[in-house]
Image 1 (cartoon, rainbow, N blue to C red):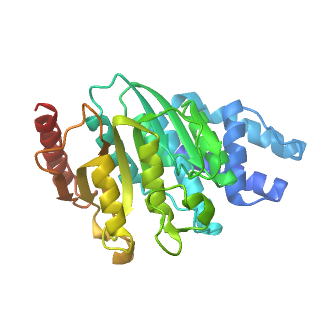
Image 2: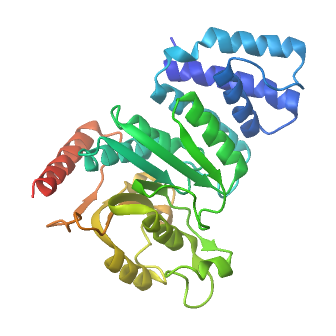
Length: 329
């Protein structure tokens, strides 16, 4: 018997393949189209033949989207997107691994416990997989959320993904390093896209612009995120392990000393990455402010494999105890 995620993925996959053929588009574009149809319970594309439109409507109706939990929808949609990305690989089409998204959701929930409502920003939102995982993990708390991405297909997928999970996310299709039309956030979450930023003129607006040559986009995005975070707000970044050993690292260190408090650095298991150079960590910052306090001791840990439940539970108990100790001060 199929799990809810498998059932939902099977329908997304089959209907996307029908639309891919009918619309002569990529599988990834077809996933966005079928997701929108599923949300509306109808076939919105005029080009679809009458016979296939009937088949599609029958599949959407029989699925009964309302019986699925948000996490079922997020995971099934993620599987369809991953299938599409494997067929049509582009460097900016990379998705945060599911276990990492769920773990980040746990960290956001624990660090923001006193907040009854939150404003959350993801300045490199992609398909909104990470952002919706965080929203699903808030335990019913109210959240206003914003996502920004320069890739129009990813923004369309994010829009459909958020709609299917009934999250009213405001999305902006633009360069995240240009001025943003968003409220200052309580929380920023971001899987930082790593590389050089091509627009030197725009980079010159940033403290972290390179002294010579091209600036690092991931450094500029950390600065941009801090600009749009409330005083005392938290930032959760997925960073390359090489962040503090790369050229320009000294400049980044100086900037962070001025603007933020390092709360934690959690290294993801190396087994998650094909090459050690690709390994990442979770970097937790708090923007300086009247109520922001440096921890007695920064939360430093090497995370066990996410599949090792006992070790993960022990690690989460340690993190909970650290947070309780810090908040109790």
